[in-house]
Amino acid sequence: MSKRIKLFVVIGVIAVLVVAGILFVRSRYVVPILMYHTVYSDPPYSNRLAVSTSTFEKQMAFLKKNHYAVMPLPELVDCIKEKKRLPSKPIALTFDDGYKDMYTDVFPILKKYGIPGTFFIIVQEVGRPQNDRLNWDQIKEMQASGFVTIGSHTIGPEPLINFSSADDVRWQITESKRVLQEKLGCPVTMFSYPEGLFTPAIRQMVIDAGYDGAVATKPRKQYAVDDVYALRRLRISESSRNMFVFWAQTSGVYSMFKKDKRRGK
View (tube, one colour):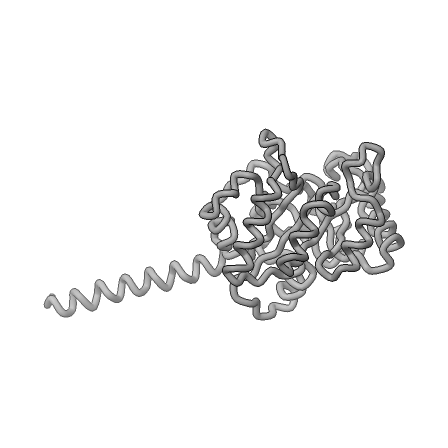
């Protein structure tokens, strides 16, 4: 075999490998949906769910400066369902549990950078005596701003997989939607599984309740990456203050290699 033929063979093999790699990445690509919980001016760093306010603002500035297309979660869900063309560098932000700092720290930063987010509310904990959760006036103000979508995180904080009665699970899903819609005067279409845990039966209840989409953490492989009722998310903690780490998490490829022990069933 001549050197020229050998060269063509090598080039051909490389081309095949490159194309195969691109197709593999595309098949596994997941639009990054970031999951935040608490954002504090002085966070307890031992809390793996906490992010400092300074880190959060640094991250939002990074998204803005680098021209990420931060999408409202309902818009992303619609694009996935309808197989619409996504913008360049799409990403969505979600916030669980309804901590008070969502109003005091997060909301002003989202408005400053013009970035939308979806907040999932535990209905039973709204305005509780500890004064560490959002109240209804704060939730209404954020929802009316145009930067915030309100979704359900059920009535109480207990993971749905812990309930022995299907009726109790169904009530958590449907009643939380009813209360939120009554309080806010608008449709509530997004749902977040408590602790990201669910079963096929629970997923179906969410569909039957009329939600358009639901987020988890990292569901089992039986759920397709474009299953809008089992959307994967990346938990953001203070370790993401390193912008290289944050860049990797927002790349859309990070989820392909990250392992998460806490999975939906």
